[in-house]
Amino acid sequence: MRITNNMMISSMMQNLNGNLLRMDQKQLQATTGKRIHKPSDDPIGISRSLKLRSDIKELEQYKKNVDDTISWLETTELAVHNVGAAVERLRELTVQASNGVLTEDETKKIKAEVVELKNQIISLGNTTYGGKYVFSGKKTDQKLFNDAGEYNVSNLSIDHAPDAIDDKIKFNVGMGETIEINVVGFELFGGDEVSHEDDVVGVEGGEQAGIIKMIEDIEAKLEAGDTAGLTDDLQNIDIYYDQYSTIRSEIGAKVNRMELVENRIVDDRLNLMELQSKIEDADVAEVYMQLMAEENVYRSSLAIGSRIIQPTLMDFLR
Image (cartoon, rainbow, N blue to C red; front, top):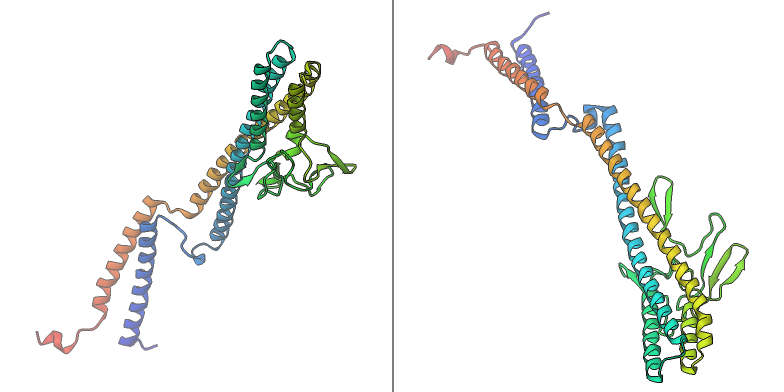
């Protein structure tokens, strides 16, 4: 086989470009700190890396859901606490008024404070978080109460059957893990619960909340001076207060659970990011050594290439 000058130059250029390409790849790894930049760099590695990226994004969304859940629960817990404080004050006033030793003026003052407590409870029933009414079930764009303490939201319900559709809001906080974040209004404020089916309880729109009925009954007894009737109401007040304490403890338990879930998500995300780094990131020290070697090879190929190209007549005329 006859070797021509053009063949030698073509082969030299091919090898030179190959050396330049390898040097460019090492320079890219050195400047970016990444080992993989396109699928051909490591087909298996890029597949695993993309899966890890997807898992990390999923965990980040779960983290946002957990943060939102905790904020919602804390807002609800504060409202329940304030309702409980109002009921506790209502009991104190009722005990004071039931003694039968108050003057007419003192009774009027107690009644005025009871009315304010009623208005405060109605206001707490319309508590919002992020522009959403927390006690209105899934109808978060509607107030729970009107000014008279009547349910403004129609057909609030809770269905205890499995996989039921009701006014309980559930957030997805993990793979196959959900949590109910809301307290439906009548759970907290009571009312004449209507059983639509064996597992369903709820209230209709326009119905007055149970606690508001009780307070208005206390107002009427204060007006009439019915001290015996006020004593009887103490038992109903205690029932509501115990109910608020139970709901508040349940919310606290959910907040504690969400904090544990949040810690787990943070740990899982860190582990996945560490694994992703092991797959994608380059060993900087090794890359710099390889880059120096490729630079030496490239310089050598340039020097040798300059000898392969035959001198021309101009070189002899110098």
